Image (tube, rainbow, N blue to C red; front, side, top):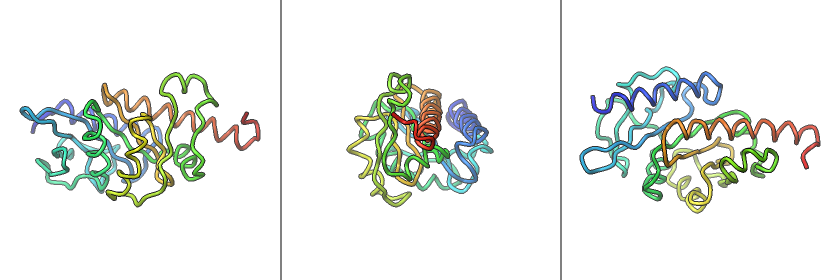
Length: 197
């Protein structure tokens, strides 16, 4: 089994997301760039398994075109979204897609997420993009998100949760996803009480 440390890191991060309620059931997916010889490959979570209960052997290895290189399980249905991010922005090291409740609620409102509600968030990661609805697991979802990716480290996918990517590490992508969910919770509280200014 190649890249045991990185596989374990994906499992540990999936467990953190699951324990915090950012993913449930079989939802969500994570990926991490690794080197295979001179080529970049991705370690990515499988379809049909709880991301909070993964073992390193469950993680699938694919190339940047989505071709499966190792693993007996099928990669997540969001392969096109993940591989598209890495190809478009070669500096990307990790991608996380969650269905965290507050961020997903904001995405379903289709009005975006105003980071000025929490200035620390605006300083930490700038603005959050809103990707118009496209079918989950489709190439169309990536192409719809593509124009926004270079402008935002975090995106709300309309009625489909959030996508975050990092140019440094999977841990950084995890912290970003957590910050976006925290911001979304505060935003919805302010919006519900009419206190949003």
